[in-house]
Image (cartoon, rainbow, N blue to C red; front, side, top):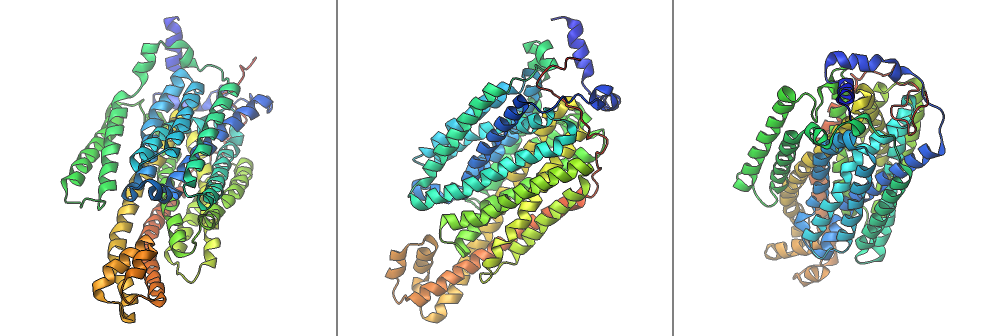
Length: 567
């Protein structure tokens, strides 16, 4: 390899502001090099979307069926970690995988990482303890490291004009996975005592099939740096210090939040030590990326074209926070207050994803034709705000209305994900599309990893005090003795009928009154979660109003054709 070739390739990367504008306006980026949609492009697009489908199956299972896993293997106090490890690992892996994809290519990173999803799903399906289930999710979470590459590939193999449609297609796959995971998974849970095991077998199989299809169909043209840099030069380009600060800081920070009030108080050293060290490392990461590393995970060129990328980062952070609130607490509210069967819970929740599919198709057509993203993104976050406000006002007497509430969430998710990712990718130089996607996915997972333990702490702090007082207020006037109230509450919260029957003086009327008190306790405790999420969504809606519509950049240029351009 000639040294001159390496120099030319390095010079082509937009590391400085003056180079960025050149990258934006070169004829290569503006030229129409689209020669029509061929079978190869379609097969690659489908295989990549199938991988996204498999990942969401795992994510849905970790939240919706966490209580079922705990019922089978124990460890009910640790169920938060089933979702939390996915968020943490995704956040940690997305930036290095994205950078590595520009140096070694996308294909085998996607294929190999997806196979980890197969292995992890099998481990969860065979788990005999909560620790083993969490370990399986850690392995599965490695496959999420390829997630930013999925969003990058579908965008760069199609013309920029169709980028909203490309992103909408991925979100349709996500929605279909949500529907499949909720309805098929719920059916398995209702039919079989440990139906979650079959669910994870299915998830593992889809991971394996999608990896094989991607290996067969995705044969991209080698990237410039992939061909010209030596192995040592490639490793030297990776942001090792940034990765170390991000992973260690995020893990410690998340541990502190997850352990808060579960089981340690904020005054305990188990909380203070990891929290302080984690925050310190994350602050060091920020200083390092701003002052010392201009071409690392937070490549400075991403922020120099316009304000869209920065706004997109805020939007995707909040979207992650909102989604994890819904994924973990909405099924809980439905199961405790309105539905006794898993299928009923899944059916109500799946309305979100049915609506999301419609929203994705609608925004794909609208944005591709009008080349606008600001208005739909703002309205999308407003729709999410409405959803959380409606949940915060829920009463046990309005069960029917809950069939309609998820429509607002589905509209918001389908539109905002499509537009936010499109805004960020179009705002970034084409050479940095993988890093752009990696930073977005990492930020989304960061939002989830931060928000989930916060929501959990809010909920548990409220439910701990509300259960006793709300149930007591309902049953003590009916004649149950104060002496046996703790036993009655224990039987009610665990659903153990034998304990309830053994309480002296208990009657069906008292049990029914206690159940209503339990519902009121959950309702009032979850209300704080929904209000918190609504405030976050409102902040994102306000920021979205300042997006710039990328009308000039949405052209017919293909950033990474699957075949060499004969010209």
